[in-house]
Image 1 (cartoon, rainbow, N blue to C red):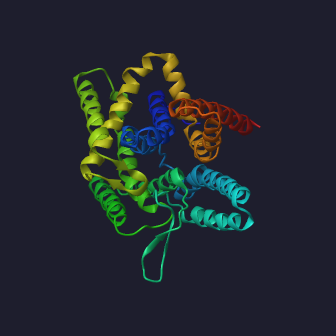
Image 2 (cartoon, rainbow, N blue to C red):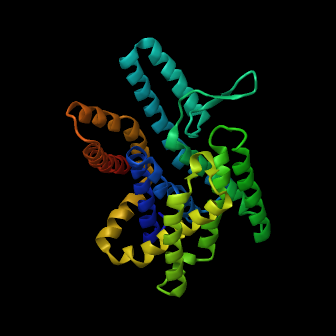
Image 3 (cartoon, rainbow, N blue to C red):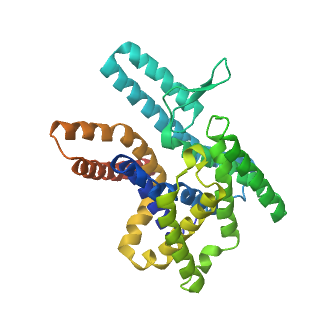
Length: 343
């Protein structure tokens, strides 16, 4: 078992909490979504890059990533597809249930979370959405692709060549997404390569060992905090579809904000054992929580909303009930999965 870095687990915990809070911002105040969108996925990719172990053979590396990422993707997506089909069957009958099942199967195989649904190419060579997608599970596929790309890039001996290849891959993923929608979130994975590579480079230079309370890190915190405020207010980063409102400026800012959070976790949250323990637990179990959140956001949240509408609860109280219920569900889910692993 690899040695874990507490500050990175804590930062990952903040990132997964931001993922959970995302839908609440979207429903309560859509214009505030970028408070979490501007950093949560970039932060995940940066930390994942730092944790990459590239000293394995490609076969072993690919096998470990497929086992860790593709299997959770498939299991979670199939559960979602079955529940969506059952929901349509109960609500609209057998025929609609069959149609929904076909859509879900296609969406799972397509593997895109573009926000408009999975796509297919018509005879007129136009992309048409089917209104069904895997949503936030795109992250697992993008992380798989990005990890494989970075593994190959790291084999080049020249750092200059590595950087050039990263730029080419990331730019192709970003630019091509503006014109064509490729399946299996490969374009998101290509752009994610840039974050993963920066994380891997930070590990190779031992940068987390150099996070001390000094002028440079305090300045980074100030710049990161100001960047977070400005980007939350004036920009919009939607990594699920490779959309950056201000292009490379948003990309750079997302890295600065992510670094700011990591530094804060090292300098401040590490001083409070209770707070760090909570966020660190979230970080260690972030993959399981992401999968449970995916199902929850589509099923459990829907049930609670219906419950609230029956009893005429106001919107804010409804959100609080959903959030508390969701958190309890995640804790039980993580504990259950950990017990299963030990068996």
